[in-house]
Amino acid sequence: MNEFSVICRILGSLFYRQPQDPLLAPLFTLIKEGKLVASWPLEQDELLTRLQRDLEPAIIQEDYQALFTGSECKVSPYRSAWQTEGNEQEVRQFLEQRGMPLGENPADHFGALLLAASWLEDQSQEDEYQAQITLFDSYILPWAGSFLGKVEASATSAFYRTLAVITREALQAMRDELQESESED
Image 1 (cartoon, one colour):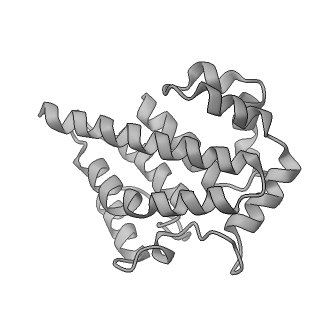
Image 2: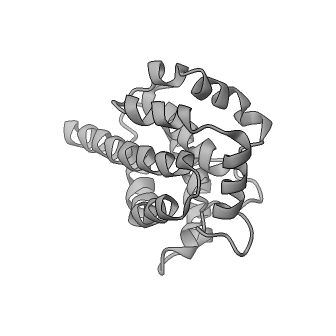
């Protein structure tokens, strides 16, 4: 798994899964012990240190619930709530055409899209980055800035405010990496 995939998998998991999800326990341990900083491929040490400092399970669980779950959530994590064109089915079809196994959950969840970017990276052959570019340019980036800005403004915990900043910077770095790959061809 390369750096691109790791970043997408970590950030996608933090947005997609509720903090009490047992699958996040190892990741939260890495953050809490400061070990994520050492292996994080981007220059975001200060932000990751803030994330570590603000990792308080009860507080972030409450904040996650208020931000992303239920019909009264503060910030919809679904692309279909932010984009006037396209819908969840379009995203699902795009991912299924690339062989990604999808369950019953909506495919246009912000965290799921980042996890899809990781999956596409892990499955891609050399120079097959066009699917990732399409995923970023058509399904993630057009609404990511608005979504992350709203997360930053609506979060009560510093954890999710910091996560929004980390994610914004990481998305730009990853898109730049895709651009470099495209330019090399």
